[in-house]
Amino acid sequence: MDRINGAGTIDIGGGRRGFVDENLPLGTEGTEVNAEFLNMIQEEMMKVIEAAGLAGSNVDWTQLWQAIGIIGSVPSGAFIPVISRTLADPPAAPASGDKYLIPAGATGEWAGNEEKIAIFNGLSWVIVNTPDGHCVGLPDGMLFIKKAAAYERFAPDATDLVKGLVSLNDVRATVGGEALTASTTVKFSPVGLSLPESTITTVTLTNFVDDGQADWAVSGNTLVCQRAGRYIFLANLGGVIQSNGTVMAFTVGTMVNGVQDLNSTIRLNTSVVNQAFGGASEIRDFAVGDVIYVWGYQASGATKTIQFVNTISTYRLTAA
Image (tube, rainbow, N blue to C red; front, side):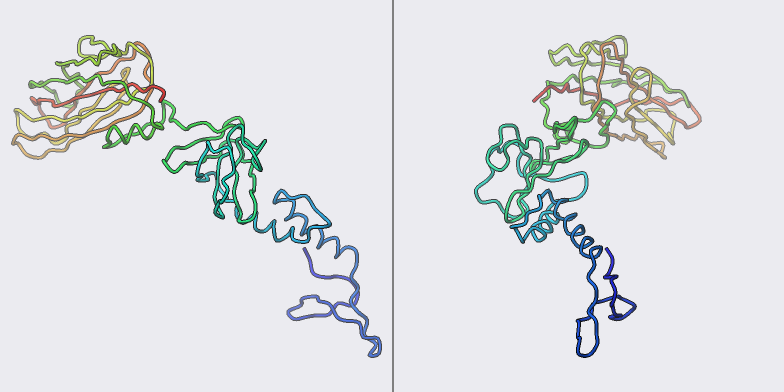
């Protein structure tokens, strides 16, 4: 938009063009209001009105005000928190700023707008059609991502890992409340294992507790997956020095199909018996035939005898 540029403008300060009233007795011509200026004003205002989703009306003289309120009530960005994604009837007494994800079968002002966001601006409902990739969140923390014009519950892919010191409830919440089967628990090497310097050594599997689901089978010192699916994979890892003095750096971890996965590095600088634990977890997909085992590694200049204190568990996820 620009300032008036017709004939007879005056400088109203700072080089700004402005209007002057006509005064014929004094010989002052009024500023020319030309079509270009009027069209410019019209289109500037219509741009705002149409961007708010309103159709121009020659009987409603409040549309610019409505449009400013609508645009101001719509959050920007890729995420909008909503109150509900199942309420089909617009609430009778919404508060300004309330937001809902409209479900199929919606009624009233929401009818025919499924998978769109309804936002109350204090006067009426504004319907926002978001693009694919947009995310909404419910008050309970559940997330939904828009894909192919429909919102789907978010759950990590196999490569989306959750690692660190976590509880089962923490990990379960990450995958959107999916149900858990009972666990498969495996313990490794309660007796001392000779661990050469700078050599990755397989740790002995000593106790396998099946959950009755037959998800895993033992093969030597490894676990072999018997049932494909998405699992929470938990590992409590650690060890105790039993002989030959100080271990400066001791690492214990898991291998999945020959690739290092969850691990914990423990730095010890004393010759007395030491015990330390690391905990880690991840969510990943396992296929039939996938192999897990536990390994140990130390770098201290001599072979050490170390008692490993390790437990790994798996929890298979199913649809809630």
